[in-house]
Image 1 (cartoon, helix red, strand yellow):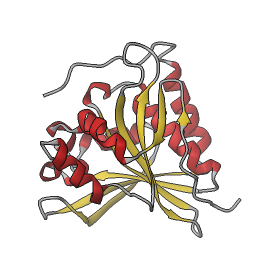
Image 2 (cartoon, rainbow, N blue to C red):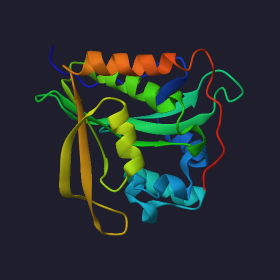
Image 3 (cartoon, helix red, strand yellow):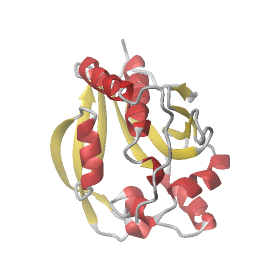
Image 4 (tube, rainbow, N blue to C red):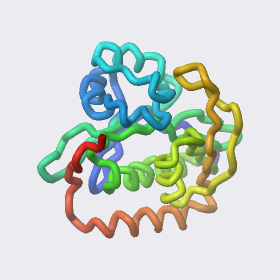
Length: 214
């Protein structure tokens, strides 16, 4: 099966629904992820990428998200007292159809859903989308200094491939090393089972907000 770029379309899970990101979503996305703690460990280029106003965030978003060349998505909770709340974003992009490779990145969540079912189900849906469209390798990476994100990526069963040094520039102009992980099609049955088992552990309980971390 040759790889094809997915058409932007909603993806439904048990706990979340993913929808293609539009500019109309940006004010609500700012409310969800526009916090210093989200940028502190590397998202958006690190602390210097943080914008403390909605207008600044909207301007920053024009250059940051993979408009047109990727499939950026936003996440909404399903069920419970926070049904319909926008709680984050993730993107499938860097499509190399000949090499059957793609990249899941640009991922950030409202701190109130850290440590919940949200990340596991988002990865299950996004990886499934990639492999259903013929991709054989999906890259997932983080700033090498971002221990939280590295642990989360390893925790979904992705394979650590090493550190790519001096890979990308941060918002402050410094160079970041990237911790690179991948899931390939041969890994997918194992990773899918791991994620499905983790999600089953939440039962039928909807995602509830946690206290905002300092």
